[in-house]
Length: 151
Length: 330
Image 1 (cartoon, one colour):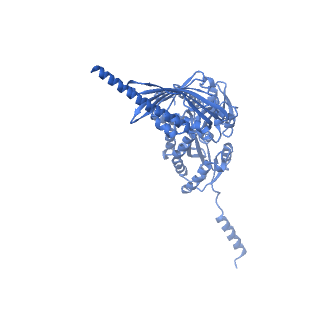
Image 2: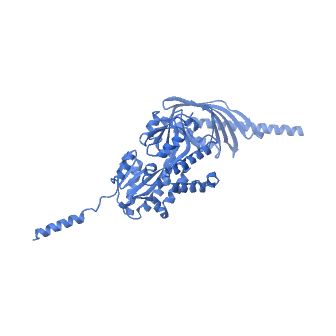
Image 3: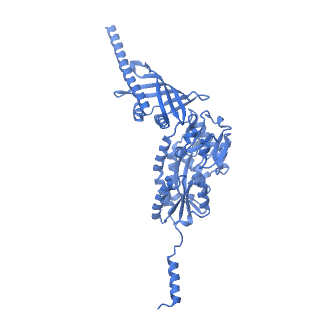
């Protein structure tokens, strides 16, 4: 009986984890599509209000860390879209780690953004760690940590 | 038949009665876009409202603020709309609103302007022949840098920064941080930044697109999202040319325009690329540095101590936990 309970609990966790991973991946797919489509409204909906976004610039000496609000992060995205042309985003696959019971989730991936800014090839590579938490029937991003190199 | 003598007397009398006592007061408006600009348009609207307060105004646009101020001093204008720094020569108290680090945000600025729109503060708005009859926000001044490697005050040493040549406070501030001051005015600072003559400028967001400051920032620069001053537009009137009570009514009109103006300013701020707050932990150091500079400049006679006291009251009502609220240095 005990062994059955252990197997049932494990199956439930794995099932939860599989469901969580699928839902989280779906969220990240929407996040990536929103960036490519310059869809600020979707980006806003995917991120919790009150989230603190930590950004570390590595190409200044010494490296500097900033904490942005959700509004500041979205404002920077919109401004980049406004001024940039010939834009592309290249994402690596997300490496997911689950907490106990499958929640919360953390995903790590990189994104390389290229664009032409003021006539010059420009861009940035960001190594991101994104935390997700359940909200209602879905998920939201409730933490972002980015290490960024710009050119 | 009317005798010729009587006819001539009647003609002279009718001409004397029908001639106007003086021309309509002239409001001179500094707007870089001239007659096509938003400030000129706003002041045309203001002139219509001013009729209810007893004045029928003519409005003239100036694209050179210095000339507008000079024409006002020379008596060619009866009222003039200028930036707060330029208006400081006409009212030291209100002209000190635009001081370094004086007010942290727009709610604080609104409190100051609302206070100055009250009848009981009327005497503070008058200096000599002049009265400040309106104040509008121009937006927070932010530092625009061509190189994000200038990521500390220490790295500002030796760098070139545009300063307004009629604001000695800016010159002193630049000297304090070890940078090189390059004399400029509002019509040429952006060009100097964009073409690399200077490494740093301070500017409100409202100038970002029209003056193409994004070109100077480029892909290697940054805009520091921390106000170094709250800038204003100020209307200065020649008291004798306006009826009693005009200034008070006019200041109320300008106060009602505060929120719509802030909405436009925030839209402009939303456009800024590479708009980053100070690195974590640096904001308090910058605030303290600006405070020390402001205190020193007040002691040197560059800022009005009464305005410094008012602004400190506003800051400490907002954030009583700040260390400055426990001392009486301002």
